Length: 88
Image (cartoon, rainbow, N blue to C red; front, side):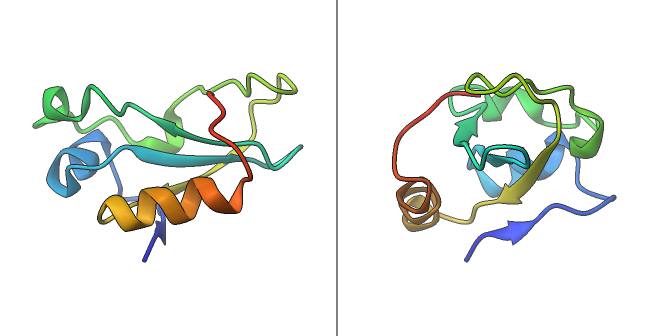
């Protein structure tokens, strides 16, 4: 089950889960999976997820909500709820 990120989650948290970050734009509800091919490179990177400067490719907003995914089922459920496979 996807878990919302909190103030303690970092890029290393993604490495530990082995899954990309689920992102939802607060302005338009656009959803995406980010860092899908780069999670292995985040070992030891303590950059906080809340500090990432992500830009919605649909509306250009920078306000987003992040979700930690646990497995491939979470990935499919997260994107399925967003109705498409967008990019962020």
